[in-house]
Image 1 (cartoon, rainbow, N blue to C red):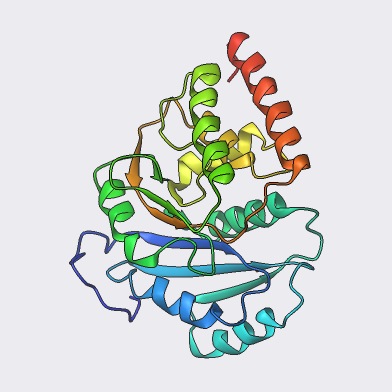
Image 2 (tube, rainbow, N blue to C red; image 1 turned 90 degrees about the vertical axis):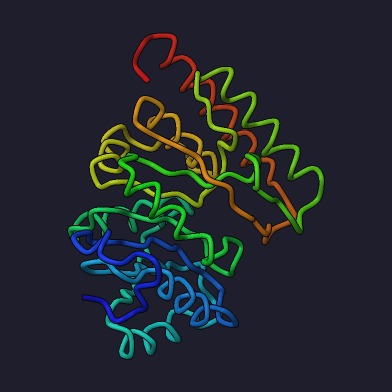
Length: 252
């Protein structure tokens, strides 16, 4: 049993192995604080493993810092993935590590406090109600999107509406990366094959989950980046219409 506080969980999750997937890069000022803040929300589980995934994008020694922390915190697993070619590879590597470790529930969260660890318990509560996937939403009632220009907000908001129309999905936020899955749901997503090489992969995942039991919960997202790269937008449109064609053919 993990040593972190149980909080309000009691024995509700005592039979569940929890995995936390968090790709990291240059997070040195906040890395240890963030890991600890996340783990403080994860008491009451049979086991907890935090998978911090690093690749060659890390230039500031964050990986060395967390390797030192790993000696103090056995729940922390530092994954070195130099073969990664893009951010999607880092997430997929984390998913596979969590599944291989036997995790029953897998939580995905961004580092640097762009996602708030204090909002994690609501994901657990919904999973305990029997949902296959729980998706964080900046646009549902109670959600918030801050520290970002209007253009970034507009792209995410309008993109979610457009995607719902084309793919028949119904989530209010189709681009958020704060989410949770059962192992069966996540394995089904991986079996489908994530083809996007940009941040649209979060939308692709949600499209693959559209016939599962899913729900969204409000989150506060602090945007760490002010820019949306043109290549990201091109990748999004290319893969959106690919998925639309799959939906029309009945293969989504």
